[in-house]
Amino acid sequence: MAAATQAQKRPDGAGYRLPIAENLFVQMGEYVLRFESEDFGKEYEERARLELRETPESTKEACEKLREILKADAELDVPYEEENFLVTFLRPTHFYPESAYERMQNFFKFKVKYPKYCANLIPSRERNVFEQGILTVFPNRDHLGRRVLLIEAGKKWKPKLCSLDEIFKGVMLVLEAAISEPRTQVCGVQVILDMDGLALTHVWQFTPGFAKAVVEWVQDCIPVRLKGVHIINQPYVFNMVFAIFKPLLNAKLRNRIHFHGTDRQSLLNHVDAKCLPKTYGGEVNIPEFPGGKLCDLLSNYDSHYEMRNQNGYSKKT
Image 1: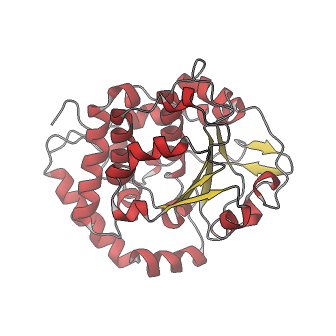
Image 2: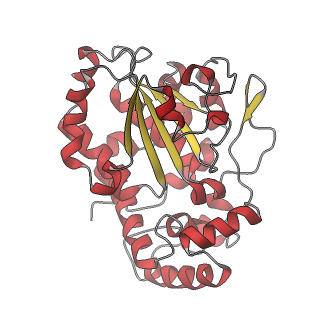
């Protein structure tokens, strides 16, 4: 039986969600960004039923079966008594316990396999990447309720000041917060990669090993419904970067990668204007704000990340 952790003793599941704190937010002009802990309403319950096979009965049955699988795994230490923890992995796998268990294994094995990305990963230790302004979470969800993350890996990325590994760790931290949100678990995430200003000095940072780790994490590990990756403002040299990643992509992920260049209407066909800033053809007036504010917001949850870091495998399996 897996060892009992402090989190496992809290059957209410509060330990795996970000703590509810209405006063923790980032002001972005007239909009507010905060991470949500509360359950979603009737509209999303229906979507979860139609898209994910989620009902009270299927949730109970899947959680019971997944819990029994985890109890029998002596190597994997996770809060299996917490329904919210189990549901985090069951939703993206459509409530099939065996598939959720496989993704959970991959997720925690990745942490052991790549300690340079995952060891002691908490927001306050990764302030540099946020202060570069490379990562932005838009305050508004898109028309389908999806979180939208912007990564500006061109003009704002100075490799001498911020490594590619730091960018990856920053993305991991942001998505870790997003997958704590019940609404995001149901609706998913969209990622926009703004490659304006990408140059050879950036391209040389990408290695086959880095590409393998990123693709493995996205395809096999993270419990998130990644609904789209949108490449915009890409120069010709971006083809060199994509050539490293392309052979590693499965058909599902490849079909969700869209190249828009400078065609804003093409982007708007996938991402609602009501969540995009005007610079990307949207309707939202979001002033550029210091990236450190996003780090400040996430750093309020440092203890939550530390608790999660205690789960998983203690050694390579």
